[in-house]
Length: 260
Image (cartoon, rainbow, N blue to C red; front, side, top):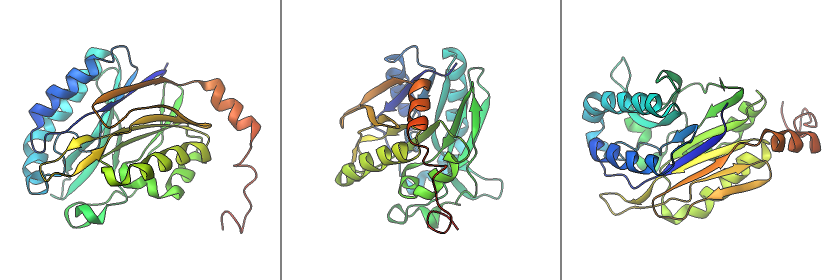
């Protein structure tokens, strides 16, 4: 049963997948016993835009094999976002999740591409967001900028989602927005949200704000600061049920006001 979750907040070395895997391993070892580990957005490459094509071709296969191996060795779910290559040669910012046997059980390509980081000109946008049943917990993915699109989360919530997984690379000047948006998406959808955000600086001196966390239907449950850390927390099914009984917000939506 999915219970203990871990958001791995790490500083990413841009363009150095091997170094990032070593660091991720150290941080994951510090949170032994989790049922699910979530790594940040583009945790193997960062936003080293010019290196993305070679990273997708040469490093991402190693990263996915590593994630699968870690999932199997830890008998846990392991997820995170990487730069991936599509069959037509285009690139995608792809979240993958591997199960306890090391098999891929979720794949999601970032749907809302972030213009300030040149994503629309460099990446192909995803066109769908899956909902996956994981040991009785219904899980939906999102990546970073997706947090600013509440309709996406509500649509998933109407599909009875219990947990959102959100890897991100959110910069320091907008830390408050990250925390508010993550907490809001959990509260308004009466679900849990696990956020794993990058920290530290990139090669261009952009600072990333960390503040990864676990959020629930009544607000923040556990959060980190802006340094490397692993945030751990447990899913409480009774809390979800209590929130949904107390306020039946989905049943009380009004056609013409809340939806067409």
